[in-house]
Image 1 (tube, rainbow, N blue to C red):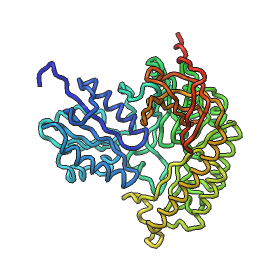
Image 2: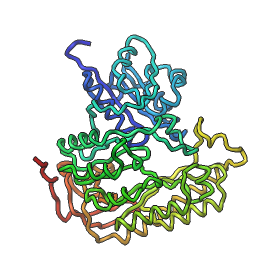
Image 3: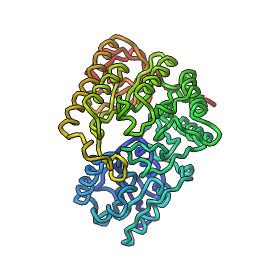
Length: 447
């Protein structure tokens, strides 16, 4: 390769928004070492697959994808597997995918350029050591999104839910310094973004030793140029009165919370080690809604957890109806090696056909509630941020309201990043269509 040629890198991301943020960090690190990002694996000198390990299905998808990439990659290209699946499987990945040269956990991105160079010399390397001081503060992320910024404020998790692999793949909880988060927010605002999403495994348990999550919301929410602040994913136990007050009083904090429930049965929640009861979850929702009028609540729910009975599932459906979730991400229980749930007695196993039936009923219930609610919204007007071109095309743009409604509006790419007032004209049950009543450019930056 001549000195005029720059190496190219392609990153493919699976899983949560924390993984998206990590991919941005890796691209930033490699850009600083002379790499250009490309959007096709067959055009890349380096292919990185940034992975999720939360469910077996996600890992099987990655293993299948690695096989596809082997057929399409350039001769001599380096293939690396990064993220949670890399952390969990380590050397097993090198055995199962002979063309993979680098296996890198979430705390190892600083070594990425060096490991790629070693791979070019024929060495296959693994870096899965945890570093509880690592927050990549000196990295300059190469962001995929030009409208909103995903900003990690916390890494790892100290909860020990019996079904969850995250503490194994991301280590113990640690929080960034508030001043460092604010500095990054100021940086993305200077780049023209007006919405920030604060990321953490249990983001509202954030504490940097001096400041808590309420302090963080206030500091970020008052950065000049920020118009919307979101966060994901919180834990019901960590919504202190201070945090709720900050959500209610900081104008830029949006009227939406994604509040994972997992089950509506106290018996199941206890086996999950979620550390709250059915009643405790409902009390949390009630406090949030009392403080924040018009709050939209979305959730995560697992069905088929070991020992879940028909009565337990009916309790889950009852909570779903009582809360009236705007949207739900629903899953069948997926056992993960190394988690306590895999050691529960075999007689507690819920048959797959039973879990599948429960999942279908749960999805139908959540969608029915959302559809009925959405029909009542037609004709109303909301402010939206126009985020991207819609996947379905037809000269449509995807936008979001403050309370996280998705609204498709007519327009072109020149409108991305702008705010508009829209009138809701139709709904598919989960997504709205709307007409722009008034379009507004982003506010000018302070200073």
